[in-house]
Image (tube, rainbow, N blue to C red; front, side, top):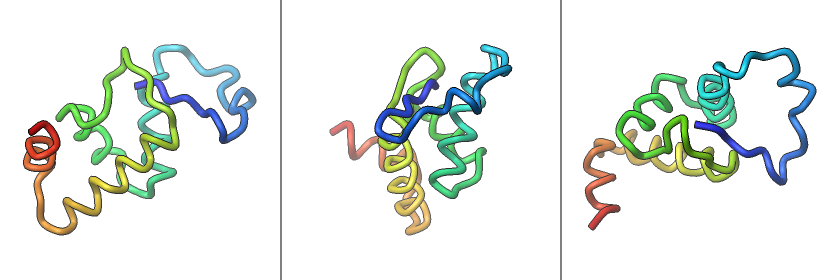
Length: 89
């Protein structure tokens, strides 16, 4: 997943010197950090199809909002699969 940091300022200084292959992991780490959730939760959302994989782009603020909403629903007892099934219908 590549996240776009639009409307949030540039992260060019932070990314200098990082290898390109770390882009997905860095995106997951950034989304998890900003959403205040474990990285494993974000990875599970990517695996379940709730967030785009490494070939896709998602604006950072949108990804953070989506993760927070899904985290709230899972904390209320719903599974990610149930939420995705409801959203698909």
